[in-house]
Length: 316
Picture (cartoon, rainbow, N blue to C red):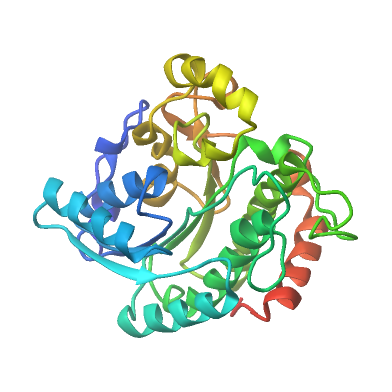
């Protein structure tokens, strides 16, 4: 039995130090070469997990592996090429991951793009933020789930954002925002999709009686590379204030994801975020998402559309 099931209770002020021993567990983290993904992977590796960094850029991935091993010489860290903007790349990565990891304990859907300035499309013709943040992870999860379902305590953790509340809706009549692209609207749609997906997956896993659970997390105001696409004026005028007074560092920004992934008390369908004012910063706790994200009809409709768009069906 994995060590995480035999732990002392977590403190009320949960930190990365509370992550239990992860020895014997396999964790796949997308977008793990920098930012929140890197910090998440580094902590899990330091705690004994075999961590697979699923990244688009292998050079940056190798640099991340070196950094993790420098900090934790005994860490077991490997690389898998993954481009979430290509369903073909997702399929190839999933095939390789299934073959090399018959047992998968954790899948952390962390990678993402934010506020892409002008409308771009993925290799499959989807709007970039929706295609990367939601459809790529939907397809990856569906193709890895068979290796998770037999594993007691396995979890799928998908990283959302407070952006799921900001001008967010699912534009079923124009998912690719062909008619009227707006970076904030696009991001909100993708992050709302992450939560709708998580809650629908959690319900399906429960109905199946599976030992696998689905959870979500958000980092609050974390100072990461995602901010590079903020509108220029906001970025230039507010960067100092943001960095020094609003945002928390990526280490703390990763804590909600780590708690969702590793806290033995975390439960299927929960959503973790910073516990401070406005969920902007602070140590992680269970938080509430928008009423829209809990609309079961909306969850089912998005699921069906996502299966059609990706060609991926789930074993639940």
